[in-house]
Length: 294
Image 1 (cartoon, rainbow, N blue to C red):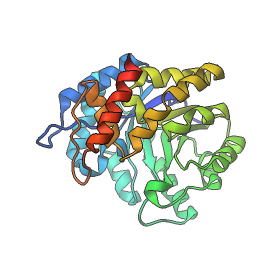
Image 2 (cartoon, rainbow, N blue to C red; image 1 turned 45 degrees about the horizontal axis):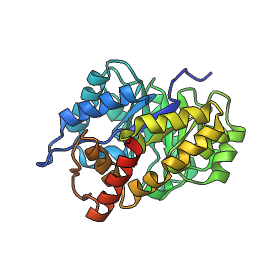
Image 3 (cartoon, rainbow, N blue to C red; image 1 turned 180 degrees about the horizontal axis):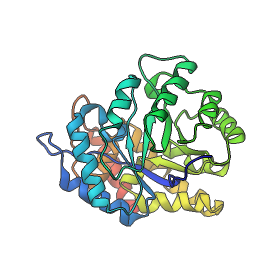
C-alpha cells in the first residue's frame, strides 16, 4: 500500500537567491516563498538543480531549507532535493534533515552511469533508510543516464516511492509508465513546456521552473488542465509558451533569475560556473514578463 502524499498540481523548484558578494540572500528567499504561498503553488521543492545545489555547501543547504520551512509555516508541503551518485552518502545525508521535510526528490545517479539494475538497487537502498515519501527524478539531459519505464514501474511498487518526476521528454516512455503504473503512483512533469499535453494523458502535476516568477499564471494553467478544462488550459499554455522558451534559452536558473529580478523578488546573481544571461535575452525576458503581468 502506498503512503499518502500531496505532491500533485504545481510544485516549484525554488531558486537560491544570492547577494552580489555571493552570499545567500535570505530576504530574497523569504519573498520568494511568500510569493509561492500566495500565488497558488501546491508544493515547494528545495535544492533541486534550479536551486544551484551543486554550488552550495551542506551547511548552506540546511540554512536554506530551514528558512523555507520557517517562512512557509506549514502552508505547503516541502520536498527536499537529495540525490546523488553515491548511494551511501545519500542515506547519510537523509539522517541530517530537520523536522518539517515532507518528502524527498531524488535524482538518479549521474556521471557513473549505473545499469538499470544498479538504479533499482540505489533507490531500493534509499527507500529503506527513510520513512519519507520519495519522488524519483529522471533527467537524462543532465545525468547522461535514462531511468527506463520498466525500472520506474518496478520501483513504483516500493511503498514509500510515491512519484516520478519525468524530464526525459520521451512521450513514448512516459505513456508506458502511465499505462502500467500502480493506481496510487504519481507521474509529474519535469518540463514546463510540455506539462499541459502531459496532464492530458494522465500526468498529475509538475515540478516547475517558471512557477518561481509566475506562480499565478502557471498554477492556473495546471489546475485547468487537471480539471479537464482543456480549451482554457491550452490558451494559457500558449500564453506562456514564448516565456518558457526564453527561460531556458541560455540555461537554468539564469533565465528565471532575470524574471524574478523583474518582479523585484531577488537579484540575478549566480555562483560560478553559472553566469548571467546576455543583455539581449534579458531585454526579451523583461518584455515578456511585462506583457504577462499587465
